Length: 136
Image 1 (tube, rainbow, N blue to C red):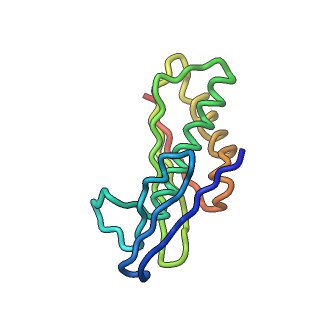
Image 2: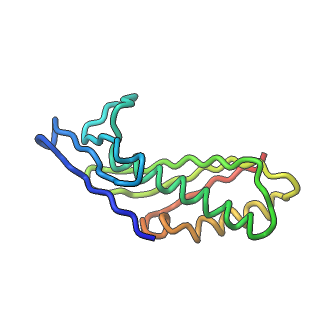
């Protein structure tokens, strides 16, 4: 699989903004900014996109593992927080809440850790990745 997105920027760094061109994706309508203000819902930034990619990929990886073991999750909800300084992204923190019937805590945590180790996006980031997993 290959994924291609083109980022286009207009204006200076402080006040400019950009948008994406992705022919086969909803991301093509997204606007990104350097100075996205807290609570702004009309634009994103690279850190949010990284968090979205990691949360989605981790959740899909865990679901793949569970499905391959004949386990069906009622729900999997993963949030991801990317921590960044001016020019460094230092870590990615995953928080998973799962509803899975018939699975004990030890098995659940084992599968959750396997997914963390296998997640292609997490591996590509080469960051400190933390995981807090809760089975409801």
